Amino acid sequence: MTETTAPAGAADRTNTAPEVLIVGAGPIGLTLAISLRAAGVSVTVLEAHSGLSTHPKARGISARSMETFRALGLEAAIRAVALPADQIRFFRGDTLADPDFTRSEPPTTHASGATPAPGVLCSQDVLEPVLCEAARAAGAELRFGHRVTEVLADADGVRVRALGPAGAVAELRAAFLVGCDGAGSTVRRAAGIPLQGERGIARFLSIRCAAELTEVVRDRAAASYFLTGGKGGFLAIDNRTQWIYQYPLPDGDDGAGLREDPAALGALVRAAAGLPELAVDVQDTLVWRMDARIADSYRAGRILLAGDAAHQTPPTGGHGMNVGIGDAEALAWRLAAVLAEQAGPELLDDYTRERRPVGAAIIEISRGNFGGRYGIDDELLLGVRVGAEPPLEPGPYAPAGDTGRRVPHAPLSDGGSTLDLLGGDWVLVSVDSERWSAEAVDAALASRAAALPAGRRPVPVVLRQITGESEAEPGAFAARAGLASAAGATGEEPGGAAATALLVRPDGHIAARLRGPEELAAALTAALGGAGRAGGAGGAGGAA
Image 1: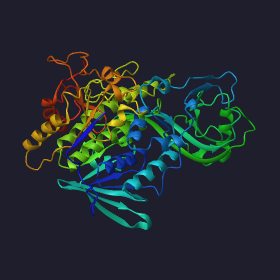
Image 2: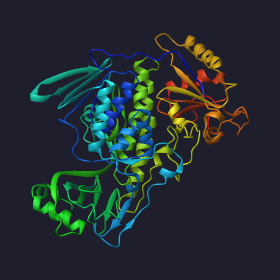
Image 3: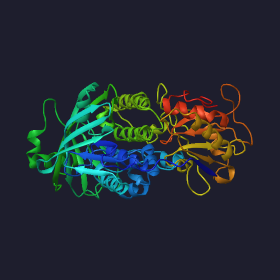
């Protein structure tokens, strides 16, 4: 495995005003902040609440999201606060203590070899501190207790007014504003972007409580406990003493009365547990509504949306937060490229074209799960093919090197993964070191740089050679990606010769399949002008 870089990347552009303002310090906003800082973009995050979430909310972090956190250097820290992998199961029974319960097996991802970073169960209240610390360490400015009251955008940037602690008014300017502020997004409303879809599919009262249930669940520990008879279910926080009970509210009941009655809340938990004498300490409550809605666009000029601000996904399947993390990853490199003058603003238009179909597909899957029996599909988002229609094919995940797919994982001889070779850069992954020499790549990039229009800057590209010596299973990557090595072709592309390299975007998705260095410049230009459209980024098109 060898590498070359051409030329040096953009410097950190820290100034008095942030280049990007993010509203919302939940998992999506914090992931976006960390990703932007990794690209050298200055960031300020505004959060209306005085601190991080104390309610577990979202809990399932899928394999694709864990790959994102692995690339950001956060995988180990998140695993350290997550539940054991063996507890990522579904329980079904009449009550928590039901002797006739059933329990699913852990997801196959942990043994499938499809990813170096299988998903985990990590509730939002313990995930956010990890992300918050990482964002601050990366240089992002986080302002808690700042509620956005006004958003004004023009051709030059965005101005935001926020009401801070003790009533102080803060005014900030930035080149771009990203709303990661949830389903009721202030930013989305200010941008005038409407939502489409179902509202009020169901309503739940979420009761966070302490109850000693260690011995009760010892033989049935799971991530989620589904109860029959319309009783809702339990969500594990630590599978010992900390729990969430999700109580389905009847039509017309907003839960206000129950929330003011601790005795009634305790009684609900005891009945659902099937333990009349259980000691229950109710710590917090939250009423939430299940919607299945998506924004018409994820962009209005210099204002963009990510996460629940762009799409509200039913939690049946655990995909909502994970789609939002994918939004953050896809948006970060685009904003960084535009701010570094490596691409024009049309690259941001492609964000909606690429991510909205993914959000819509996941909403449809999750809506179909509601009211039925569904399993844990940790590998679902590994199979996303951005820019394709549909973006998700039915059936189990299978690695591939198609344009728009995420680079396939193959184990390396040093114990790492081919995904570890990416590092948030534009990367050229080659299996033919003879054809893709450092000199040939540098010459192609120099030729492209010389032809750029005034005001446009060149894009650094890292060359990674994957050879048999570098792989734990020689030839595995070429086979999974459908590439031809110098040792022998695996197939032919439309137009004749077999592809020998992949041009990979900073988010790990394949921008183009290339036969030789003579195709690199055109493929890179196409990817930066309309990134991610399957088969439309130059080069060799689809997989062999």
